[in-house]
Amino acid sequence: MTTTQTHTLAVPGVDLVYDVRGPLPPTGGRPPLLMIGQPMTAEGFNALAAHFTDRTVVTYDPRGLGRSVRKDGRTDHTPQQQAADLHLLIEALGAGPVEVLGSSGGAVTALELVATYPGDVVTVVAHEPPINAVLPDAGAAERARADFYEAYQAKGTGAGMAAFIAMTSWQGEFTDAYFGQPAADPATFGLSTEDDGTRDDPLLSDLSWAISDYRPDANLLTAAPTRIVIAVGEESTGTYTARTALGLAALLGQQPVVFPSHHGGFMDGEFGYAGKPKEFAARLREVLDAG
Image 1 (tube, helix red, strand yellow):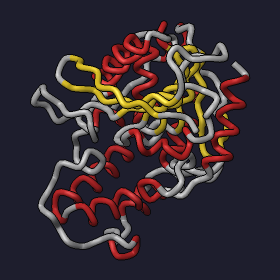
Image 2 (tube, helix red, strand yellow):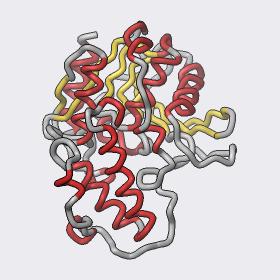
Image 3 (tube, helix red, strand yellow):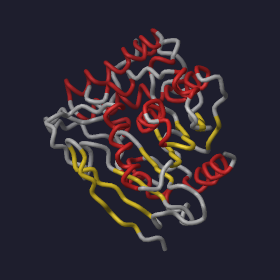
């Protein structure tokens, strides 16, 4: 059984908490494998990391989430700040450059990391990054995002999450048919209709809008020495994050690599996602080994 060691790295504005499974420096000639999400914390990768006992795996809680308590007085989540944090974390590991699996908003952070610190990463697998700018219906996607934000502000978490699920499960572009639907009912998804009064959820508020507003620089990304792989879930076809993955791949002049399951395909019940972590791990290993 691989031992997990938890560390705290003091960087400007936050005590960054990260977990290391396996030895540092790594054995076997392979670099550390970072698994990063947003707004997901380290435990979301527990099921996937369990399939990489032969690798040194690093997970972390992004600034302001979970155990990584902010000291800078800010509440927003930006790819630029998170990439700067990861750069310092990779330096602290003393075993870079690394390999990275970035999922969802973590994939956006990984792209910014490559663009800004290209020597930090050997290979990045960017799994379904939610980037509106690469969509042909980018304006409509921003309107759909505003809809779940407004539902959250008006009625709380249940209403906001129901509207978020309606957006992320919609097939195809956000057309008049999408916006003409009745408001999503939280009870349909087994969500509470009670409002606890909080409005600072990193997913449902506007605190993380910088992630979906991110504009990737294709010139910087293609010029970097990093091998960039855009990944999409086989069960995600037609949904928002599958379309953003395809749009980003086209921007970079490549075809996305298909992974098992859906947007949370590497999870085993965490955060309500029941995916296929064993199959996802096998595909990830295959993609990384091909590099």
